[in-house]
Image (cartoon, rainbow over all chains, first blue to last red; front, side, top):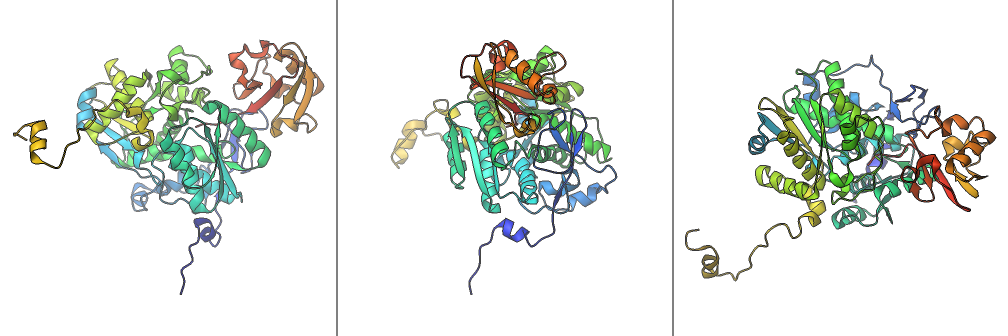
Length: 424
Length: 91
């Protein structure tokens, strides 16, 4: 007897169809049928899925009884029917950190730990789980992305197990952990000379020409909705209530925007107690177009050329920067820009106080939270959640030469005592 | 100055299906104005009411975002390639 190894996609072909929701333009409201398309044909604005306001919604007990993944919130994800692929993403730990709360001078603090999100150890697994189901539903056999690293890992991993071909475009000089963490899944991996914004332009043209399902380009309306599940999980894990403040890193600006949407949708469904949390965003000083937008009070992002070690959030022309600024302003939140030195210190502080090793974007979040606390944005009554979106093992370069080198000794007690004395 | 102007599919439909158009001008604004005259249905997708680019449409002059080159005032040279990209994606 032999056992056949079949892919998720082959399995799913025998199951009921998943139907992506229709789309509407966020700017002009024009509607169009469900499709792998992200651009409004009327005004070129971004398309978003349209939910039936009368659809049946589950109560808290029903949600709590479902498997621990982002699909426990499927009524708020952009499909009708049951999800078929990537069923294990999301529902990451919410870890309380009294030590970090003391450092910030706030009442309580939790870390939303997406550094252990499955399958590729970043919050991008959430958005790809949504997008890859859309790709499958549209009958696309090739997916891909333009990525600063985490998304590359997530698309490559989830495409591999779904049995889909993948084309991944990244800047040529990404951290080795992110390159290896993509290449191991054997996608078509293309390193492009230039910044993420250069990669993005090429990838946008490729999506237009070849008809692939590029998750953050022509599947973007379905992709972005996966980010809302961070907000849903925070609320559920706090006991169906909101914190008073949430701090997240900002790259394209989508996460902050979708956090606001997620909190609003759960409140609208009657699932929450507590006011909408204030939203705060952090960027590295070397690439902080959204910070500048919020601080200036302007309406449109002024693009920048990135220059920071925080590669995963080095997007100089953030597509959702305008919407992120609106979400932050609308909740009474604010922004923080941090130096590369401070974000490295943030990585170390999170590790030393909370036992979580995050990548550079997470370091920016921690350092940003410290800056916001220092400037009086938080008070002792605040309950703060920090969104830690990626794993530190992907960006170990950031800590090279920073951590003390461990001594090497022979396996002799006398050598140990020679180093540390007799009173160990 | 003769230049090549490339459109995404969603806009090429408004230019008689042409995704690559030959045009001329001394600035990017001149080139856009010429193309807008030739393709009236495309015109309102290329420029807003004030005659500037929309926030969700990015113009590249060769490989550079025109916002780093003075926007529509950017001078163009013989053989330049102008690329219009609608809705740059998120990370």
